[in-house]
Length: 92
Image 1 (cartoon, rainbow, N blue to C red):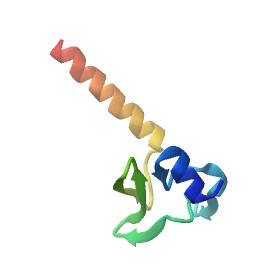
Image 2: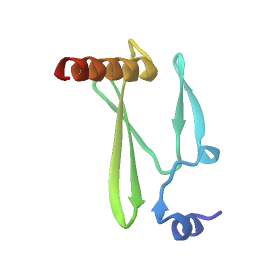
Image 3: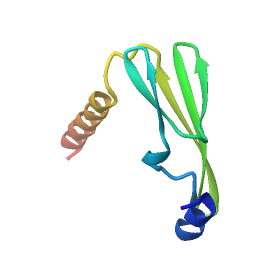
């Protein structure tokens, strides 16, 4: 499916399509980079930026990653969920 066909079908340009990803080894991990992703280094890490057109609105998506992470994204998400559950338990 071409990008135009995808947009005409879904109304979304720049969608997540794993088959278009390029995997690049970085130190002790792997970066998943899409053709339309801009990568830049920042102090202590790097930034991935994409523009996505969804429902006629343009979204600028930036993901910031530390150069030497101390936890996985899953670990961080679980911490956030636990904190929200504790907050809800105290409030209720």
